[in-house]
Image (cartoon, rainbow, N blue to C red; front, side, top):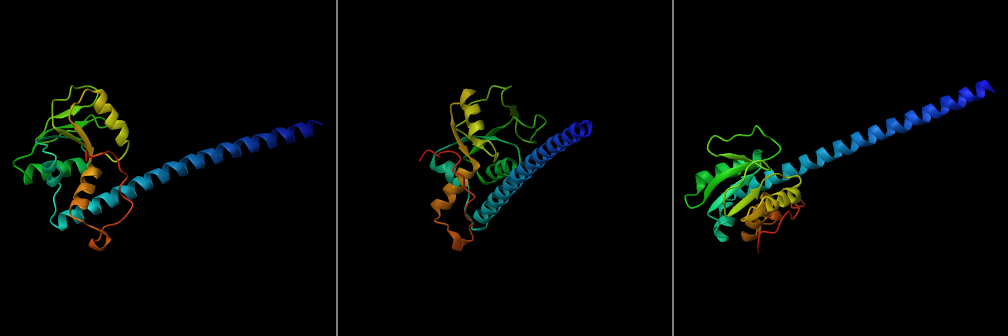
Length: 187
């Protein structure tokens, strides 16, 4: 009888350990899959932007169409920094006023003041571009709750505007399924 109780205890322990190990591996798999999905989206957006630039089109068209003169950039990642550089170099009519960062409190820029989302009051600007790829809707809500009165758009929305304006399609080298309709551009 004692042996039977020990065997049952060992069996229950093995089953519990197996369940825990399975849960750990499933969680690890989900996290890796999420990172891979993000990396794939990021690669496709970089490719799309480079293709637009290669074809001689510019993101400036978006800001000109909507008459946005003062721009802020939310997210000082690669997309945010490249957009700032593009707008600062290519336009004399559009002024990049400041940058906003939340997740990287140590983010700085050599030419712009970087405000901390949630800590600093954001100055007035015609438009803020969310350059992060994750949690775009969450960042949009944060901006609206902070009292920002200007238009909020995503970096993906700007690229899609340029693509549609110039009638670009797959024969131009575009890849599909990168656009997630992050925010509405106001059209």
